[in-house]
Image (cartoon, rainbow, N blue to C red; front, side, top):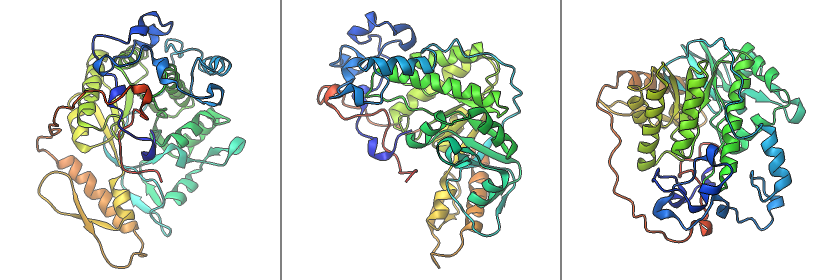
Length: 400
């Protein structure tokens, strides 16, 4: 997931599932894995390589054929773009929790830890300490100390983070030891890192990111840490590939997705809800969905998936800004400034906000729908290769 400053208008580069792919896709050697790009108005591009406009390809860190030596090395590190070589294993998967779980991205109490009756979620980067070859998993006591929270049922670790943190997971020196230690530290469930699929990059970089997601999912589960597969995809073909992967791997019992960035806008949200719905229907077995995004989307997808885990960071950020929940009869919670001493401890406030959010999530019975949005004007403003764009829509700066 990308930081806010990397976001811009990108609709010309989003795959819209049109029947016609770019003209050059038909002769591409990676067409089977990629499926081709289908952009608005037929696009001004011939192939995805038109998105490579680096002055010096050797200085770029994208997985791009224009830097052949690095490209070969990056493809080799994931053993190619196909997903069918990920080993099959009978992981000892445990039932995943369901409902609303509060996500914490900092310390909420510097005194006595705040006890939560069930689970607490944290980003993967906050469960690891050290630098370089000295990186390791935090201990049980370190997790409690660094977050000021004691979840009675255990921790959930999410790989949905800013890219600068997500990429660290791929470079961990001893992956299996780290993930095994997390399990011993009280982490009961996790999601695989969400490596970004950029819209303004050659598709080879997207395919490389998908393969890394699959390998990390496998490694985390093999280490004994029950982990959901993050099904990040840019095109419908990407979701077809994930669907087939899940069908071929019955050990996949849970998946993850985020609606915070590239899938946040109304049209994009509807497209990805449809893709997730199709995936669940084609798999034809119970699946748990771990979701970041709005409560409206979470409630909609409860009708499709066996269980939905909604990771909600709102109580944490509201507590950081000293806001209190304002009672209202229906819909999402409303908030107002608490007032008083800005330096006062927020542990009790955080707990009350977390409990209020969970109660509201479980008692919400009103019909939830995503409001309609006006049709977009798809007349091109310029050639996509000239646009500074990315596949992520604007969002709040969650990761300063």
